[in-house]
Image (cartoon, rainbow, N blue to C red; front, side, top):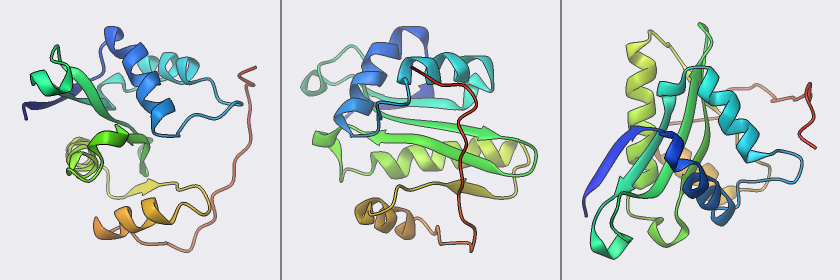
Length: 148
């Protein structure tokens, strides 16, 4: 396996959206292409992809995992952590989280948060193994710009 973690490149967009769809991360009310366009304008270097260039992966640096991180000066966040379904369990999620955390620490970020959809026990267990724990906060959201 020849893995490489690097920042997102414009040519990755279709592969990234396909990966997010395959991993079950997309939602009808949230346009993934718009999310990518927004991220490209803010801390683009924190939008990471893992690629595999082995022939078994399709060669040509196939996108096999993603993580979209950000830092607002107070907390870091990681969104769109996705691993190709046929590659889950290989440590790619752990690799991307470590890469995102490393970049956040380099920016002086003291704490990172993730949000997990209710009922996603498998993902909760994954983050638990990485040292993440509930911190007594409730995530709330309000859509300011609709994606329809």
